[in-house]
Length: 223
Image 1 (cartoon, rainbow, N blue to C red):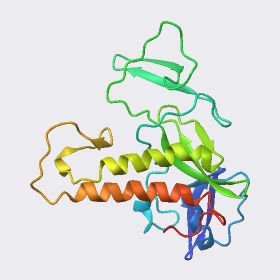
Image 2 (cartoon, rainbow, N blue to C red):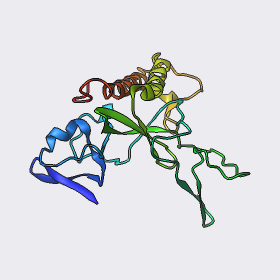
Image 3 (cartoon, rainbow, N blue to C red):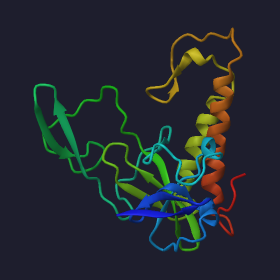
């Protein structure tokens, strides 16, 4: 069921059931007429490059940002890995246990080619007085809740480590957009290398905003 409310005189969609895909937690005050059930609802993560987007105007409702070098734990907090559908151009399809999960079919080998199943940061939720981060499997979409700052530290460290790798300037020609990382090929140092600095700042902000949710008073307005 779609969730709708009023914003600046217009009716906007902010989510579906408990998922506020089109609203960040720090935007709740902009839609005061909506009665939130904060103990169950999940909000869009405050991605740093979306600070200027108004409630209801987010285009990619299921956006997630890849966590560099991070793997989901074998035991998730609530969810379990689901099913992934595989489709062949000849007209076949088969549903199999998520290749990123522990429940694999004996003898079955799933190869990765153009793989995009890495864990991603996706949402925030108010749990236990904290704005905890929810990460998702990039393959099947199952959620894993980082209940404490200790749970979140590996994800925070993953973004900080990738930011350190990106600290030195690189050419935008070396950015591998498909895999969301720098390529291993030769580097062209001739241009202004703006993309590298922008990406590094983004990674640092991701780490800051995850951390902020576990601080006293939680997340209010992004830094």
